[in-house]
Length: 353
Image (cartoon, rainbow, N blue to C red):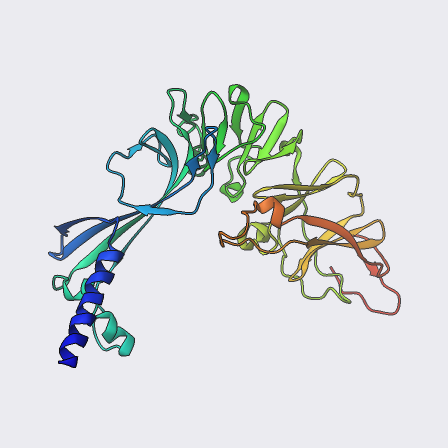
């Protein structure tokens, strides 16, 4: 009798877990070209709400059935129930059962209701939608996708990241503070080379924005990359950036060092750090696993990060890349007198460059 009750309870738990796991999923079944039964499953999580003042507020995700009335305004902006969302979609296939030999966890997995009720050879095609509330929909809402037919693929993709209505301009799922929709434009100050595709630049009046963050009246067309040199030796003997393109290829330093006029500029995907008057004719730059270093007017400086990495934990406030990657130049060490051609360090032998 006890075994009977245990089995009944176990079965009830499996049924409850199955029902709970599929709440909000929209499911349909079809057969693919290989003759396998495919169960299409749509999952949707919505973020954000409109408060009593009519403003959009961030909220934790709310799971529900995939919206049947979802309408695409562009490849990335959609509307549903009178609201505009920035939508991301993660699509993937999974198997409800584990085939072949497996451990005890695999055996328990195959005892799940999903596996027990699956058709032999079944494949689950998952569409995981995440909707981020942007604004209430209006006739004035427009996207920038396709607004410049002469641009390349990566530039078209950037244009699709922007939208506007008569009240504001939006980048991804947030409002761009300080942007006037009447005089806003997406620009490409670095040219058509796709190595710059990580940097989204726009302009409104005299204000330039990088990644939706205002950087002031800065003309990024004047930005010039700083070419790294070989390590000067002594404490700096393990440089890992030998070419300018290494900064684009690896991205280990969180940004790209450059120069605008007499200023050193550190370009990041969420803004810039600008160090007025720090550039000098004899200046050179190199990078190690510890950071980016400059030799300026006879002294070494380090470009350091002084904020923690971002977190997805909802208990903590969201941080933009500009906030958590704040970089600053600090005096690192006076190791001697160096030029672009040679180093003369007291008491040590400097490496060649």
